[in-house]
Image (cartoon, rainbow, N blue to C red; front, side, top):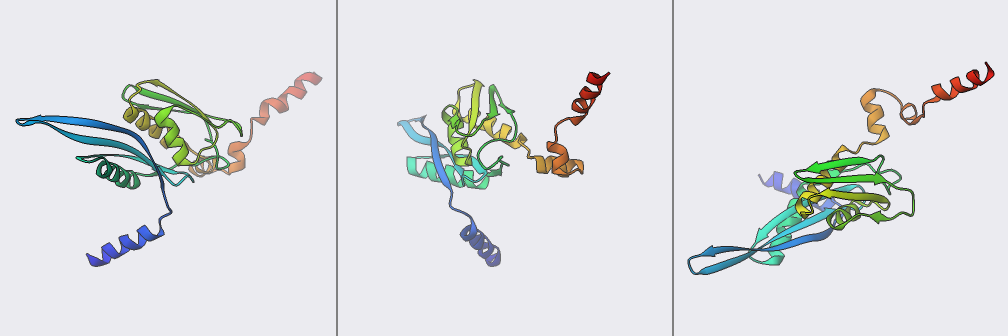
Length: 189
C-alpha cells in the first residue's frame, strides 16, 4: 500500500503544471425543517495548454472547497487532443451531448479563438490559438463543455489515421492526384 502511494506521489511530482478556469458556479439550496441550507456547485476546466484538457464539477458548502473538488476531478479526467502545428484542430468536427451541439472548425493562423463562454475556456486550457466554434442548442454550460469534449475526442491526427490504416502519413495527406493526371489527357484528345 505504501509503495503504491509512493508511486502516486512520484507521478504527481512529474506532472506538468496545469492552468485552470472556473466556468460556472451555482448556489443550490436544500429546504430542511429549520429553513434552507445553501451549498455551491462549481464547474472547472483544467489543461496544460499543450494538448491536454479535462473538466470537473464539485459540490460543497463553501465555494473554495467546491472549486478544489472540481479541479481534482478535472485533473483525473483529462484527455489528450492532437493539434495541428500546436495551434488549431486537424479537421472540422461536431460534438453532441443531450440537447447541446457544437461545431468546431479549423482556422488559419491569426484568427484567434472565436467561441462562446464555456467553449472558449476549453480551447484556452487546451492550448488552441485559432479556431471557429459555434454552439447550437443548449446554452447550459455543463452540456456545452460535454459536447465540446465529445467533439475533441473525435479529433484525429493524420499520424493516427495512417497508423490505423497501415499507410504512411504522406499517403494520407496527399490530395487526389488521379483526377488531375487524367485532366491533361482529356485536354489533348
